[in-house]
Amino acid sequence: MFHHKISSVQKVTKNKTVVGWLVAAALVGGFLGAGVTNASNATILDDIYNNLLKRLTPLIPGAPLQVPPPSVPESESGGTQPELAKPVYDYENAVVQAVESATPAVVSIVITKDLPVIEQCPYNPFADLPPEFQQFFGGGFQFSQPCQKGTRKQEVGGGSGFLVSSDGLIVTNKHVVSDTDAEYTVLTNDGKKYDAQVLARHPSLDIAVVKINAGDLPTVTLGDSDTVKLGQTAIAIGNALGEFRNTVSVGVISGLSRSVTASAGGTTETIENVIQTDAAINPGNSGGPLVNLRGQVIGINVAMVSGAQNIGFAIPINAARQSINSVRSSGRILVPFLGVRYIAMTESVAKEYNLSATHGALLKSSDKELAVQAGSPAEKAGLKESDVILEVDGQRIDSSHSLAYVIAQKSVGQTVTLKVLRQNSTLTVQVQLAERK
Image 1 (cartoon, rainbow, N blue to C red):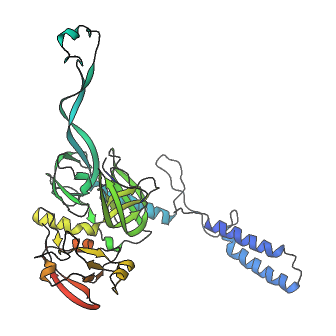
Image 2 (image 1 turned 30 degrees about the vertical axis):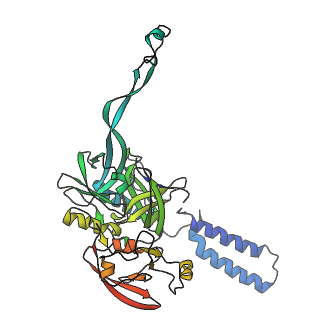
Image 3 (image 1 turned 90 degrees about the horizontal axis):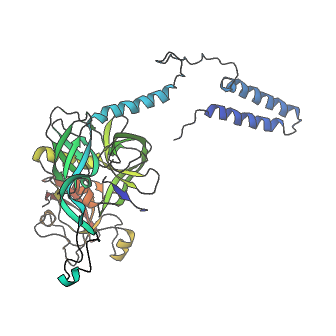
């Protein structure tokens, strides 16, 4: 089961009105029990008490109510069951509808590989001894050692994905389908099995697109991850632990624009601008959708913090839109290329290089790489060493939006506008992005 792990890197009460009454009663009791004897004070307290009693009587358990009691519908078994409060019912119904909308397009991805079959084979450790010594090692000994008896296809892991086109395009994580020697099988929600082909793996984002040969398939609806807000409901769906298909977990959006360092399969990478959620994300959920209450996909489940309680992360779906559209139009992921090497600006970097900017990307060479690559779009646009790129198309470059991440959201051939700081002067530069080779 392939899944990113990050190493140590509402409860609704339905008795608020009763609690409010108890508090009010306690406060009033406190006044009356304080030994107040002044007549005017006593009158004021009587007025307060009577006013509170008039307002709170409908809320006091056992007091005569002035509203009809809730109806009690019959259950299918013929008995009765208490009716849910409307807000609770509406919320529960919204979750169910969101799951019903997205689940048909969620798939499980099974990873298989030819692995050696190891058995115990008999052998004679004394076979190399001279014949005259063989008599001292008779046939009473039985020795064996591991030996390979051919190969056999074996399941080595599993992940999740979701259909974005009726002809079989599936979005998942790159780390789910990273093994070029493995074979991949897709299990759709209706139980059908398909051989899968990996069409494209993004070179810098943990995104991949897989294809199965089928038609008239259900698809998800893509939402807008830029409008996601803290506290809104998040629903994770996927092949939990590689064996519980279409497992649903519900939580909220816990954080936005996180940057995390995650590891899987012996590799480590930094994933930028991810969504944090407390909806449980388990091994095998990788590549599955994170959806909102409308059933729209707002993220791709990608990682969890090992040893923590429900701290998971998802790649915003808007970060994957360009890759999806690129595969639809060209059959591969076209990655835009600017052609610079940079250092992320911080206060300490600004102080070290005596710069006025504390955010942005400082173009700086290393021993092996130039700040501005020869023949690149950046060189053609006139960018120079020690320039600081402050914005791209109005998007501020900072710790939540690195230059690499922002450029990755653009299209090959697109012209972008850079706001650049050069020797304490600000200028605007137009750059036409090329394709990353």
